[in-house]
Structures are given as C-alpha cells and as structure tokens.
Length: 445
Image 1 (cartoon, one colour):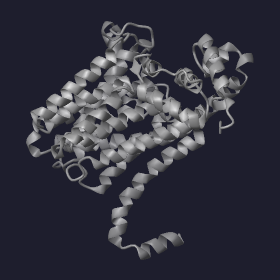
Image 2 (spheres, helix red, strand yellow):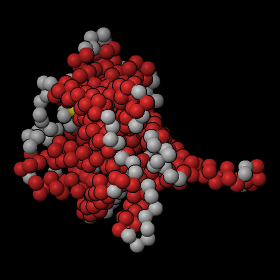
Image 3 (tube, one colour):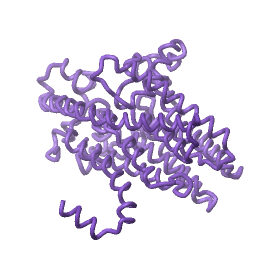
Image 4 (cartoon, one colour):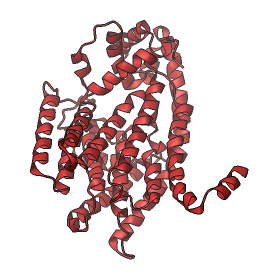
C-alpha cells in the first residue's frame, strides 16, 4: 500500500494513465510463464519422442540433413528439429526448457503483432489488453506444457515477422527478402507454416503492392511448396486417406465447428462438445462478417492485418479437418489445437475495433458480441487452466516414474502415459538413456 501511495504521489496522472494498459497487458504474460513453472514437468512424452533419434544421432556424430528434413506425419519440422538438437547439447533435452522457449516465442509474436501498423491499427493503448489475455490464454495448456509444441509458436512468430517486413517493403527490397526468409522458416517448421504464402498474397493484394513484389512472393511460394512436397507421402496420423474428410462431410463439418469454438475449453461439462460447436458457429459468423465488411469497405483505409490473422486461423482449422477428422469429432476439442483459434478471434476483435461503429448498427452489435466472447474466454481459461494444469502435472509425474523404470514397467502403462507405440518406445527409450537425456540426465531439473 505504501508503494502504491508513493507511486501515486511521484508519478504524474498522465503517466499513470499511459502505463495502466501496458501493466494490465503484462499480467497474462507473467501468468503464462508462472503457469509453466508451476505445472510444467521435464519428461519425454507423446511426440517429444520423435526428436530423440535425431538428438541421439547428433550426440554420436552421425546426424544427417535428411534426418532433420524427414517427414513427421504430415509435417516437415526441419527448423524445430534443428533447434531441439542444438538445445539438447546444453539441456540434455529438458522439455521444460522447451516450454519456456515456446513462451518466449509466443511473447515475441505478440510484440511483433502490436508493432506492425501502430499508427493505423492500435488507436488506443487499451486495445492491447483484451488481445493480450486471449493470446496468452491458459486454455491452450497442452500447447504450453508439451515441449515439442514450441514449433507452432515458431510458425506464428515467423508469419507475423513476414507480415511485419511486408508492411515495409516500400522502403527497399531487403524487407521483401527478410519476409521471404521468415516465410521459409515457417514453411519448414510445420504444414501450417505453408499458410504464410496465401496470407502474404492476400496482404500484398490488399495493400496494392507493386507487381514486382507480388510476383517475387508468388515465385518464392511456388519454390517452397515444391520443395516441401518433394517425396511427400500423403497420409494422416489416423491412417485414413487424406481425402477422408470429403467422404464424411457431416462429421467434417462438426469437427470444423468444434475445433473453431474450442478456445473456451470446458471439459468438466458433459455437453462441452456441443458448446464448442455453438461457439464455433458464433466465431465463424463473426469471421465472415469481418471479411465481408473489409472487402466491402476498402475505401475507409482499414488495415488488412486483422483479416490476414482471420484467414490464417481459418486455414488452420480447415487443415485440422483434413488431417485429424479421422480420429472422430471429439478429438476436435483437444487443448493443443487452440493456439491458432485464439489468433482467429483476436483478428476478429482487431478488425471490429479499428473504428468506433455507430450505436445500434450491425457492426456495433458484432463488436459487442466479440468483446463478450473474449471476456468469457478469459474467465473460463482461468478456471479450466488451473484444474487441467494440476491434472496434467500429476499425469506427467506418473509418466516420469514409469520412464525411470521403463524396463520393468507394464506396457499398458507405457502406452497410456508415455507413447502409444510400445515397441517403438523401447527403441527410443534406450537411445534416450544412452544419450543421458531428460530424466536420465544430471540436468533433468
């Protein structure tokens, strides 16, 4: 209390007024890293195991570029693989370190977001606050507490950096080269990274950029896509053909709606899946309205960044349908898929908040609706984040105990807590032990 009184007396009212939104915006960032510290546990689980052979090869000096490039399900994760290998030399594959690194990438992406067109988009410092609470929402706890998920935050950062440089290409071709480099890193970090190219085309078209820049971007996109799909095997994790979603359009639509609306993540409710579908419909209507008003009102000078975020989010949700709908519609509610859904709703909020709509107009009602959704999302993320963080930590502690004595562990427990393919797990685990990774390392904490 004395500190607050001192600050009030020493700081001018104008300074306090300017600092308040930034201090509020820091709260979710701090909470995000605190959450990782409290609930994150160093343990190799799930898709973390896929990087173990790469690290083992690197430790024993027989790692090849082709190993880093190899297809991981439907993804090319060259750059995340490279980063994981480099980090392993210092941390012995401490997955909690990767969690914090993912948080740094997410914080960096938000910083880039608010620095892109400051004078055109961020009309008030208070506009930072709600997007900050959404961007760092605890509803994405799986993405926060799995080490390998830093790859998606890397993709997000590179896409925003691409837009950041595309915004400035009129100052010189060096910015175009920088944008292409960021897009290439995004492309070879995850399948979703390829969406940077169509988003960039939309962005350049909306900005009415010179034909040379558009042609250069499209040529780079073509080269990147050809390289990505060279030798590609079209399959998905559920062992269904990639056209499975076309043969089951009803289920695919349910999946699409649920994955779009799962940013609220309320698994304790028995009807949570139907809530996801309901919120998915609401978000899609808001997204459609935002795109329509942007295309209709281009003369008002509205910036294309929010709609670019919306397009990226929608492309991600569609990719989920293609790649994961074979698992069944309930899988759409997984927390690990919420990050880009949060990007989608932030884009909607920014578009509807650029100008103050007149009262009792459709835009004013749409803006009120998205603000209510963001507040509701913020409340539910605190409630479910705490519960699921505790649950996740208990599960991973059990997984660590099983891993420490994996040679004597029940295969059913290994399959449940560590890795679904038990024979493959034993091979990976022996590599991890030989390389002294994670729990087998003296640096495990």
